[in-house]
Image 1: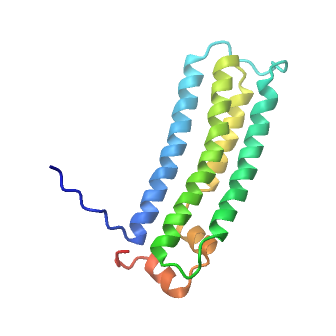
Image 2: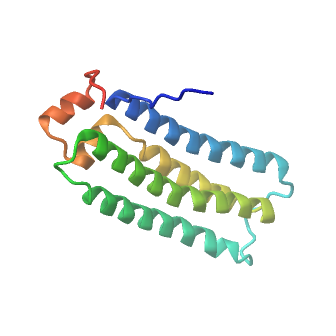
Length: 163
């Protein structure tokens, strides 16, 4: 029988975990887009009679807007008196929701490219990936978004206190 011990994380581990999740989502989109580009024949840029040409940008803008709104709502619901562990877990959930609402339209645009061969869809996906890169979680963004106090910032900055 395997004896599983719970993983004790400190704030630095949290930041690394969140960064790995972020990087994996970006890498998946880039690899999928590159694979789609290499395997799709008949690349074009002037097919404007396709319904996907309207759906993909609308999904991208909607995903970005709803993701931002839900992220802010979820972050604002985090209790300021909660321990840092609880705040970081809720923050990570909010980030994952935000990233999912961006990744969906990106993958839709890549699949639309595969179906139509229209390079505009890869451009849409590229713009979404650029937004993803901009939204990379950093220690400063976490501190600002959660309005951390002095002690919590010190704990996040590198003390090895497990939570």
